[in-house]
Image (cartoon, rainbow, N blue to C red; front, side, top):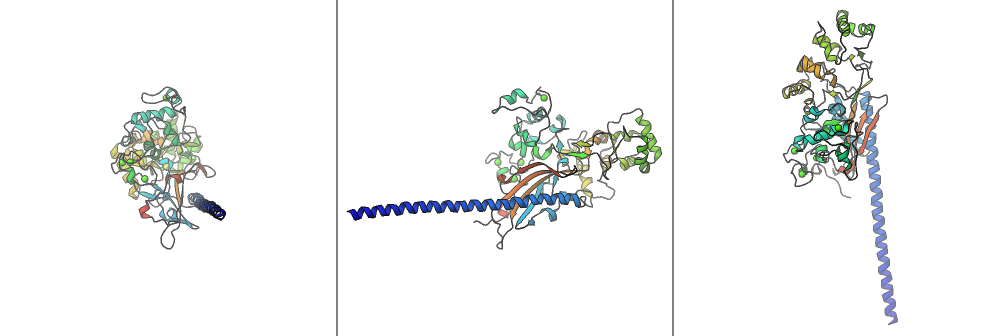
Length: 445
Ligand SMILES: [Ca+2]
Ligand SMILES: [Ca+2]
Ligand SMILES: [Ca+2]
Ligand SMILES: [Ca+2]
């Protein structure tokens, strides 16, 4: 009897001890996994960040314009696809809105519409009706968010409506610090903001084209419809200098001496005289007005277009880069028609001899003098702020499988200042893998 209870007691002790041991072992196993996970993501993150340093080097040292006059960084797989950094491979990619293709390279903020210069007709011209039947609400809402007054537009929203939100909000009444602020604007759903590529992998995944079956509630038309984030920016600006980095000639303010020394060798002193004559009675509001100077040809204009300015500021925000902007963005420029947009896209991609994409002069030949004068101050052919989407993954092993884990970063890099700086830095790892899993095999630990 006594021996029996001792046996029971011993059995219990053994059971309890082994339970304790199992729990302990499991916990340390979990801990080991967690710490190896931390180690892995640290390695991936460091590789992703060092790739950003490489981008800065690429942009500072390389020739950044290709033979066709378009920027090399738009599409350069050798420099941006699966670049090895230690045992990690880093890719930098985006979806080209013009072709819908995945590109290894950088996209630029100047290819988008800056909220600084956006008005009702520009925002209204964006193809947002593919994603929402509340486009008036979206357009008025964004304009109210940015404008300084507190009067709501017909379909917009100001303090009173934002105060009812939980928690209550206030409109910015100025430029957003980041675009994602616009998610607070009524009507701007995640679908409207991010577009159908909700996981930002530059592809239309199955759940992104099945309507309401799975999130997001896309339109199910098998076309990837972009969102506000693709079309808008708050970051683009250019330095008011010519291609040599010399401050442009302010045609309203510059001395006659400067006029002759900067422009004389390009167009001759007789034509410089004519500009100076016109300037006595005219305050130029656009460099396009030079085309109205008697005897001034479009050839003359193209020779000096990059050297002259009517802006006295050192930095000019919001100009649209007509070399890189997608058709949807070119289309919002005043006076633009569908045919002209098509022609612009064709001319700039033709790589034809004689098409000089280094200045906005080439646009004049396509759209004609009057339309050009409307948009001359809104265009540029240079970009200095880059939208960079990095994904870092481990190299595949001998069996062709990648160890699990990845890190995604999304940053905006500004190269216009004296030093490169990041205007935005976001960790997008939580958005999940970038490339479709069926194209990649990951080993399971
Ligand atoms: Ca308002
Ligand atoms: Ca996607
Ligand atoms: Ca869906
Ligand atoms: Ca669609």
